Length: 87
Image 1 (cartoon, rainbow, N blue to C red):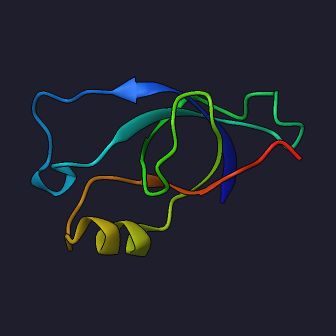
Image 2 (cartoon, rainbow, N blue to C red; image 1 turned 180 degrees about the vertical axis):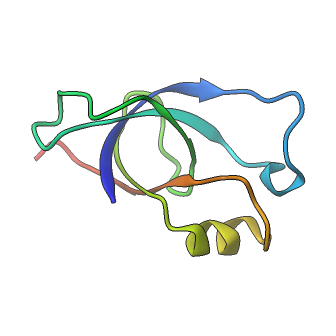
């Protein structure tokens, strides 16, 4: 799991059938200080009704994504799994 900030949305005119109806976010992985970037931005599938600017936890758990997307073969790697409050 990785802490990340949602920095935008992605729109695909052509996409894998398993991604039909999925919300695609561009997320910036962050270090523990919640400010320093930890690598390049990634594409993540939303599973928690997050929005641009939200702090989220992302995971690369392929099994979770296959269950959420109801597909045995999906090219998606990252998904949001939790919204992080500001406490």
